[in-house]
Image 1 (spheres, one colour):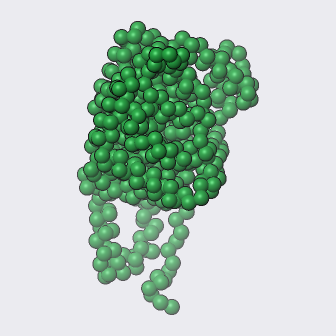
Image 2 (tube, rainbow, N blue to C red):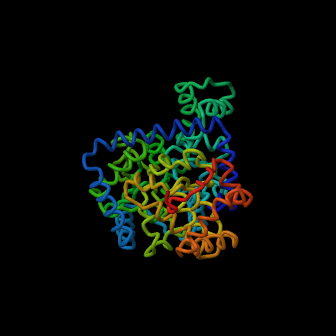
Length: 458
């Protein structure tokens, strides 16, 4: 099971490797620029985009505040249509439920469409341990599965792969060398995945949203795999974080207008699918069984607290595309699941600050992520809150806490401020000898302080 947490120094080490990788830097620049430019163009067509964002924020905030009610409504509506809902408190419970459904149906092959929550709970490892072979059918996820790695982006999971790397991965399956040409690579991927769709015993998907009034699961995709996974196998299992509900279809429409534009720059993605229960009498398409696995996995601990607003996130990826840190380090630096500003906030909240202490610092606090968020989550402010928590909970080193206490003492008293700024020019060369000074000046020019301070006059 992939860990949301990572060693404290893992981010810095992975970031250094990413910065030294010219191919990765080129792929990140091209990918994030394309997504960012698409979002900017799509938002310009909205008219009063800020009013729509405020409306979306209100919908998400109201839903989370009354989440128990909407979960109950969703369950009742889906079960009235023949579906089944399972509430799972932990990742282990969710994995156990999915494995049990596969066991009861005798499943040996599971076709999966894109699902970040399945990455979060480590579902593939659990399925393989139970003798079920999971195959990712989203093209980006399929490539990452072949490479043995995890998604680097919420919307574009293989954003870090170059065309040549894709050709190498698909060539290993084909048994012949494929040219790094788009049409050739897409045709090869289709050939390799076609039999999975036809032979899968179980289809597993995520859920962009669940609609409480109808019991529907909404999938937003740009590839036909989502519909194939949810209609061809006899059993469909949808994994949904407990916060992904929306009260009504009308309110879903508001969020869809923002999700596609923010994520990929499209007015709507190619496939926007609403699934409501299993196949009914007289219908030719659809599964015999539909299971929706509603996953908590520490989300409920955020409700009613100062980080509750993070549950509003609709997983569009816009914050990643504008973040200067993500655009240079890529997703792998953050860990195996969530990355960028939303990951830097969410992962410490789900996994614990003491196990993810580097992530709140993986930000320049420029505020671009907050400006890009379609539901107005104040991401940079939440990152500051997490940094305060690092100090308050004693997670940061004693030396760092002592240094900031001394700095705070000096700069909150006029006489100490005057003295410290006078001594700064003399002590500046010594600053480079400290660990923090060496780290700061390793990649930056540290200008010499002026001989005379502004306050000294002419």
